[in-house]
Amino acid sequence: MSSSFHPQSDGSSERTNKSVIQAIRFHIERNQKGWVALLPRLRLGRSPRLVPPVVSTPVLAPEIKAAKVIQQHELLVMEAQDNLLLAKINQAAQANKHRGEEFIYRVGDRVMLSTRNRRKELKAGDNSRVTKFLARWIGPFSITQVHPEASTYTLDMPNHPRIFPVFHGSQLKPYFANNDIEIPTRAHICPPPLKFEDGAEEYFIDWILDEHKTRRHSRYLVRWKGYGAEDDLWIPEQELKGTDALARWKERSGT
Image (cartoon, rainbow, N blue to C red; front, side, top):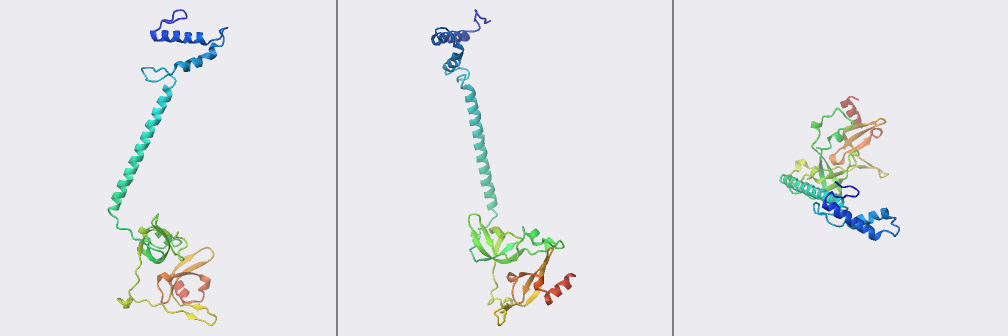
């Protein structure tokens, strides 16, 4: 048992006490005051000695333990990042097994757009439509911008203001116009418009394809006589008043 005048606890403690007292004796002032303020310096002076059980110093032992924990966490993070990268590589390899070679489009090319992911937008404003009856492809549309870094393309879609015109290449397919020489029965000849003395041009309406209603007015998708779907145009109702096409549409739709 260790007491004030009988410090016999163990050999290591007795040796430590003697060394501390000896250090205090050499560094203390002549009047033997200020020894309390000296203790932190003595503690730091003795701490660099290695303690065999932990192979570290008493002062640095907590820091070394914290450093090891940080190192272990860094290793775990690096291992997780490697596993994520490996998983992405495996997923890409499996997905590419079922993919064909990507078709590269250029500005000015005409393409068809898949409606697989756009059917909700195409039937917006008309709850009577059935999704399964919508066209699987719409167009053709002209490509106005190419983004090769993301394999996306910007299309010219003036008749579809609700649709954001940037699409991935997987949603497009090339548009092939009819060969009028090989298939003359499908030849599509666009008639010229009527021209007036003031230079104005006028086209004939073949029929109305669709209607889009808002709170204030309605718009109609018009197919021009002698022209294809790529030339369809949304026209306000006030510009179609008095036309046979609008009368036929209202009679057919019951409005």
